[in-house]
Amino acid sequence: MAGEYKLIDTVAYPPSMKIPADPFVTKVFGEKRFQGATLEQMVAEMDRCSIQASIITVNTPPGPFYPYRVGQKTDEAAFDNVCKEVAGMMSKYPGRFFGAVAIDPTGMMKSVRQLERAIRDYNFSVCFILPARVGLPPNHACYFPIYAKCVELGVPVRMNVGLPAFQGAGWVQHPMHLDEVLLAFPELTVVGAHVGHPWHVECIALLQKYPNFYLLTSGWVPKRVPQELWQFANSRGAKKLMWASDYPLLPMDRCAREAWEVPLKEEVKRRYLRDNAIETFKLRLQS
Image (tube, rainbow, N blue to C red; front, side):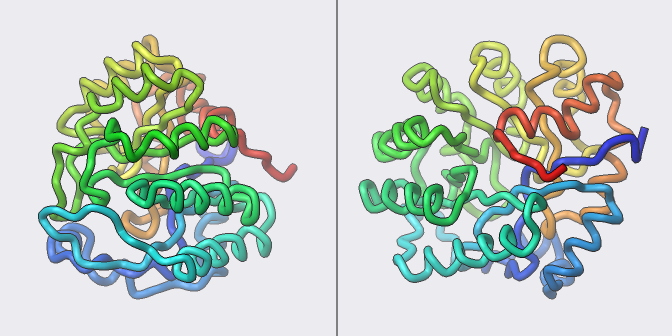
């Protein structure tokens, strides 16, 4: 089936991404993957892997991950700089890249204004929040203004679920914190990222319960994704799972190659590799 249609990558980062200052991340992913590539090299790799488009998350300035850390406290200049980088990628390669803006909800109304600026001024498509870096679970009150603004702007929020790869608190990313969020905001599209392990079965329960909840297999090479997720997609969840490379954290070529080999029915596989992303993130692709 490889080559009959092109893939949509739901999570990637700019080629300028720097490795976070965390020894566990270095151990898991290795230093070499963060030596830096050019944008042109990234596009060439996408072409080799038959990836039509990628959703690029802003490359927030790396910093130390403490056992308890509330907020990134990114200043306005730093926020605009990372937004401009991804906006530049989108401008240079129209239809190949879409922006996901990383938001620290503890900034409250400052965060709301940053989100609105990213969507309206820089033409981003997705709001991204990493609870383990924020230090608070997604049902904390500080998140709610962001959710309301996402509903108003008509953009989905991508939320990491499961134990993080870095040395941050894992409990804040337990997927059941989203139960309250999904109940309170039925108009909000919530997309869980990174499978949700070791609570991926709870993720499946949420996927079955809520029509506005979806899950990405980002952060995992497809061969390592828990089998329960494939079984769910093949039975009741054809529209719920989406593929990602997580480039440069994971090798783009391996993730793309293994994506074609996942144990999904052919019609479900196409949805997983392409169609679900286009529909969920409302992507306007170039013909």
